[in-house]
Amino acid sequence: TAQSADILRLENVTKRFGSVTAIDDLSFTIRDGDIVGFIGPNGAGKSTTFDCVSGALAPTSGSVYYRGEDVTGRPQHALVRRGIARTYQTFRPLNDRTILENVALSQVPNSLFSLTDFRADTEERAREICERVGLEEYLSQTPDELPHAGLLRLEVGRALGTDPDLLLIDEPFAGLTSDEIDQTVKLFCSLREDGMTLVVIDHNMHGLLDLVDRVVVISFGEKIAQGTPEEIHNDPTVQEAYLGG
Ligand code: ADP
Ligand code: MG
Image 1 (cartoon, protein in one colour):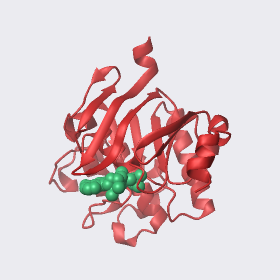
Image 2 (cartoon, rainbow, N blue to C red):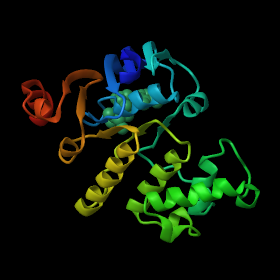
Image 3 (cartoon, rainbow, N blue to C red):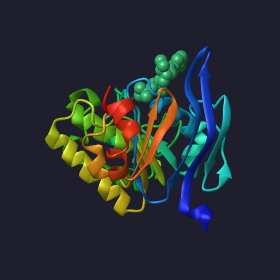
Image 4 (tube, rainbow, N blue to C red):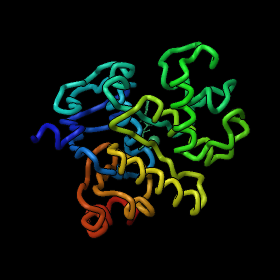
């Protein structure tokens, strides 16, 4: 059905901060099972869009539909339960917890428990996720002992702890070497193989175009193009407004 084909739909979403219009009448759909690149220059409104989809912020106007259901303005914890997870551009690990605890605690919202309080399957699942994202060597270390690429993997692992269907990833490639970008791309592709839908933000197009099924490009809060990577690459509006800039 049409409902199951689209996992996410934004209709005329606007978000204002006082006199600043961060996103302006933004509409797009994300198909279930795709990896989508969400691209635009710094300040274009990408992270604010994630905030409005994940429930961190309520839109000023417009609607967000998840699997056909209007979820506009629902709180983040409710949307996490529905299967929407996100990562942050500025990593948000629990600094006084081990890597394993970070991932285990992500499965237990608002928990203050220590690892010894977990059910065995929570810890087992955390170990699986750590292995999945390539952190198995760091289980008993703390986030400050991880390299930058490891912190990104932890951020993704913590999002996976909530068992998402839709994973929103904010600027994962910033600060990574090209080898680390390749490994990150492989990880994202393997998550899609498992049936997850991914929306990946980047402020430039390089790297992302090879990875994604579809692309949405925004500039100054407005959608300026959407389509396949090839269509976006050849789109004169994108070249003019974005690549040319
Ligand atoms: P991007 O992620 O594309 O770089 P953002 O969504 O972070 O862009 O920001 C879009 C615009 O909204 C920018 O002009 C930014 O300064 C503004 N903005 C974002 N968050 C806030 C906020 N909490 N208060 C005021 N302005 C904000
Ligand atoms: Mg941002």
